[in-house]
Image (cartoon, rainbow, N blue to C red; front, side):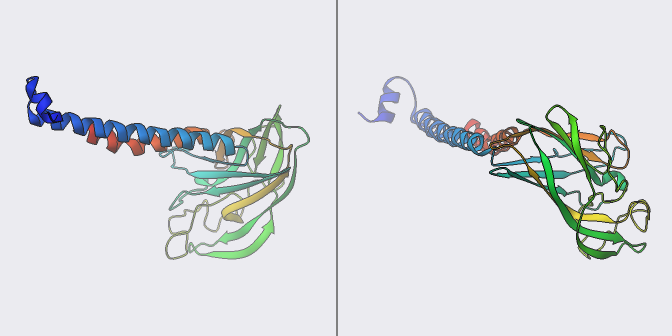
Length: 255
C-alpha cells in the first residue's frame, strides 16, 4: 500500500497527503537553514576578535538635530596592531550636523593602548559644491581614555579628551555622481572653520594587547557634543540579517 493510499484508508484524501509531504519537505529545508544559521553564528563568534564591523542601524538620526546619519567602523586586529577604518556612509550629505566627528569604543583589555597613526584624504569644499583635494595627510583627531577601558577618538569630544583640530576634519559622506557635494549647505560649503573635511574614510592605527575585543561602540556626529549614536554588536547584526533572510522561507511554508 502506497503512502497516499495509506492516508486514504485512514479517511485522509490524496490532496491532504500531498500537502503533508510538502510540509515535511519544507520543514526539512527550514531545519537545514537553521543549521547554516548556527554555523555562521559560531564562525562569527570565533573570528570576532580579529575583525569586527559596527554600523549604525537604518533610520539613525543625530539626536540633537533630527538629521539622518550613517557610519561604519571596521576594527581589524593583527597581533598587537589594531586598525580602525572609520567611514561616513550618508548619501547626499547636507549639513555639518551629519559629519562624523567622533567615536567611543570599549576594549576587553585597555592596558597600554596607544594611537600610532591617523590619516586620510583631506578636502576643502568650495562655495559651488566642488572640492579641492589636499591629498592624504596625517590627521589631528584627539584620542584618550574616556573611562576605564573605554576610549574616545574625536574632533568633537565628550569626555576629557581634547582635539587640536576642532572643529575641522569631520568626515563627510560620499560625493554625488557628478563628483560634487550637491546638497551641502553653507555649514559645509566654503565654511572656513569646518574646512578641511575628511573625504569619506579615515584610517587609525593603535597598539593594543593581544586578542583584544571591541564592544560598546558609539558614533558622534555634528559639531555639538552629545550627538551620540549607539550600534548593535556585530553578532546581533548577523542574526538580524539571517533572520530576515529566512522570512521568505517561513512565508512559503505557511502558504
